[in-house]
Length: 135
Figure 1 (cartoon, one colour):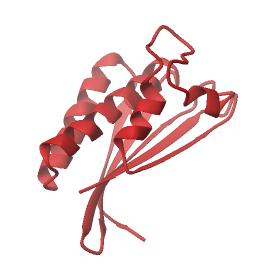
Figure 2 (cartoon, rainbow, N blue to C red):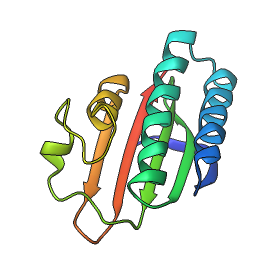
Figure 3 (cartoon, rainbow, N blue to C red):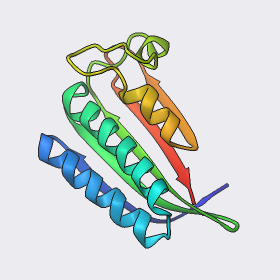
């Protein structure tokens, strides 16, 4: 079971908050010694998921945690909102499917960029996406 050694919470309300989320994740991955390619993967996933939180979830928050699990160090990001929820998670994870004007790569693409991915959502109950990238 990983130990949380540091945590920060960032509100996600407007488009500018997506930039702040990217910056926070970049800083945490740099401080924990991630290679550049792994930094970029997690920053990209954070960008997609924070944008989804703002646009589709009607705002929420990102909790960023630095984890230690034995010799491993990781960063866990939890995106949560109280928006309309996702009626069909399997469909939402399908590449090319979009409920809006996007390219339909957000959830599925983000899942491929991380080591661990979990999503919980239901219509009217909001959405919670948790991702972890290990160094």
